[in-house]
Length: 232
Image 1 (cartoon, rainbow, N blue to C red):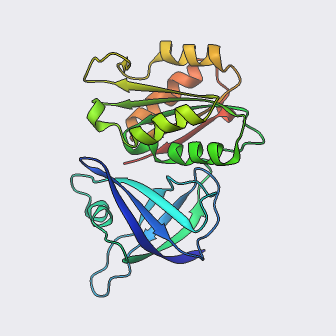
Image 2: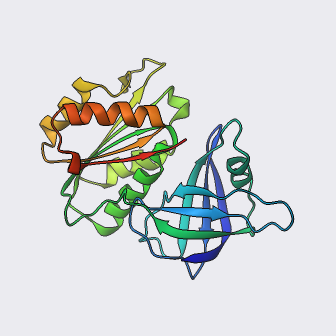
């Protein structure tokens, strides 16, 4: 389903990442974790279409938010991050099977790196808005503390959602209160001891997703309980 949506907010999250808020009374419904294909409506030159996961929950009526990292050579991501209130584009969707199903998933582990955090912001909003009893652990890896996207949001989620634990991991800094290094087998083993029946969601750059999925499967998590989404 296609819908025209209008920008009503554009928030700087980090030096290279923005969350853009779009509004339409005709916003398509979607499930937590799905994505939309974004299409500019500029006349003349053709602008490529791109796919972005929603970083807002379907419980937020008439709203879709995309949390977008500007890629060094990313023409479309730079256009999106530069959008102003009142500008419009088309969204087509929803698409994808990277979906949190609260009826089937009482325990979830979310493993993210970089802008792969976007769908997990959606998950947390959804769990908070619906008051779900889901047990959740998020491990979010970045190079430095300054690179953490939507940190204020996730700190607030951790305060408001009783069964959510958030772990921030830094790969190029050592700081008190942060895990040091990449998501590895000891980390995954600890997560499984805490939530042995969890469904694992992994989202981030392709290499991170592939390497982490391999570790999760080697740790004994059945493949049907592992969902992945690659950004890049």
